[in-house]
Length: 157
Image 1 (tube, rainbow, N blue to C red):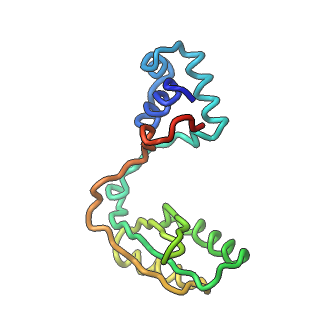
Image 2 (tube, one colour):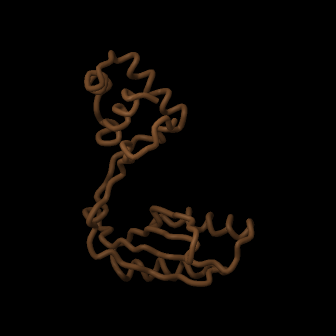
């Protein structure tokens, strides 16, 4: 990856609706070499997809909950069961496996406390959870999907 690739990625992650011609012009290439670079970044898995970002609150999903899980089991079969359950729950928009006191951190989007209560009751039906703790977001101070390319170690990719 070179500076042109980084610039292409920066522009795309800020606005993936840019036309190929506009993108190529921004990075100083013609459209064909620019398209080849995008295709290579996609083939290499650096560009994982292109999406539209929706405003959850305007769609009636105004409550963000961070759910910490500690598990009582750590065998492969149970981890597959947990993963399957979490993937099947549309309210769960992010799952991170952690090192430390907690085993997993979930980001959950729901309409309100009653909706969260229903989600929570469904979640705890899964045997093998030792502790489930919820933290409710009062205000989203910063949110971005942009990867901080300037912080990436040189020569990555």
